[in-house]
Amino acid sequence: MKKFLSFLMFVALLALAACGGNDDPAPTQGNDDSETEISILLSKPEIAKEFEVAVNEFGKENNVKVTIIPLAGSNLFERMTSLYSSGNAPTISMISAEFETFKDRFLDLSNEPWMDNVQAGMTDFVTVEDQVLGMPLTVEAFGYIYNKEVLDAAVGGEFDPTAVKTHDDFRSLLEKIAALEGVDAIHVSPMDWSLGAHLSNPFFAAQSSDRDERHQFMQDMIDGNVSLEDNEVFNDWVTTLDLMKEFNSSKNSPLSPQYDDGALALASGNVGLWFMGNWAYPQLKEIDPEGNYGFLPVPISNDAADFGNTQISVGVPSYLVVDKSQNSEEQQEAAKKFLNWLVSTEAGQEHYVTGLNLIPVFDGFSIKPEDSLSLSILDYMSGDDTLEWMNSYYPADGFAAMGSSMQKYISDNSDKAEFTKEFEDYWKSVK
Image 1: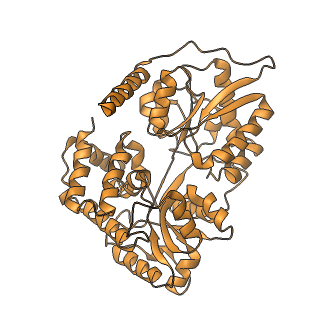
Image 2: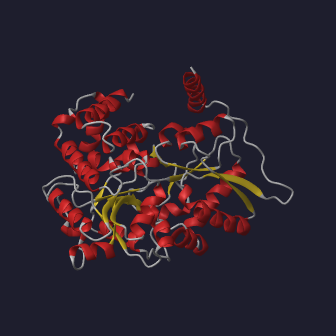
Image 3: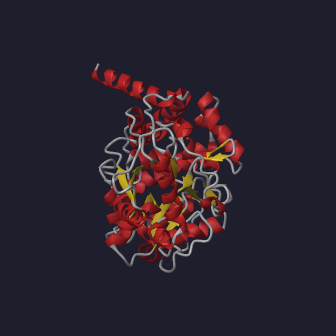
């Protein structure tokens, strides 16, 4: 009963948010010193410390008081629903899949100065009827992060990531790493967001090199027109999961590791590979400032020519949007000023690249990324060897549902038939 009542409360909050709910007139802001007050809902806790440093400098330069709102244990959708329903909408929100639900509340940013420099395609997701309603924060990538020193030792020379294009290549590499004394082949982080949002992406993205076809596949999943048992990409992708299970450094307790365990294992040279994204670089650098890392694609078949075997998943993880429904015009102007400051000024760019470790999606940046992971991503991007982030189009509960099924599979609490059925059943339940 308690769970049912909680569910009813959540539905009520969602209804309020979706239909306009508890909007109050835009409040008048500012104190006796004419300091404007704005708030930013931060959905990337891994950069919280560096983000606070950046907003503090912006605030001092521009007489703006900036308050950072954390997720506070909620997921982003729940947090936004709660804040909007209580009339406390953040001035700026860092969002992704939540865009579709809340888009009517966001300010048109089409005429902002940064629009002149944003790279092609980066605002497509947040463009509605020719209005750009969000600024892309950066691009990120995920795949197998490798410790180059470990892999050089494993292959007995200079490791070449382009040499791993098939399941057989991948197995051979895992065996060579595992043969090193005191080294395990791969660390698998069991968090639902890592499995359900990221590791699931190659399955959807590799369905076709044609964007329309892979998006149609996702719709076919929803319509119940897909038999995963007969889907070649799905079966090959499960083979990749099986390889990760077999060589997992925590295969005796696969659901035990925490996020930090992966960074420590890779940077310390205790494993050769870790499935994760470049947002982990600050933790890797903190453990081993001299470490050299790169990305290896997730091979999803045994045919080197198949789409997906030589690409890594690259996309825009978050967009910065400005609320127009519960924040004053003065606050909206201060928010737009912050967005421009972050990507257009020397001080902002310094924080963006060096402090926040973000990869620019704007031309004309005077400061360039220099870390090995960012450079690896830029190499894949320059060669057009990237997979679309299909996870941006997952339903709000998609990663949690698929992540749960993947946790059961990698911990041997379900077999392939059960795993397959859970995936199909989830997508058929999407409305």
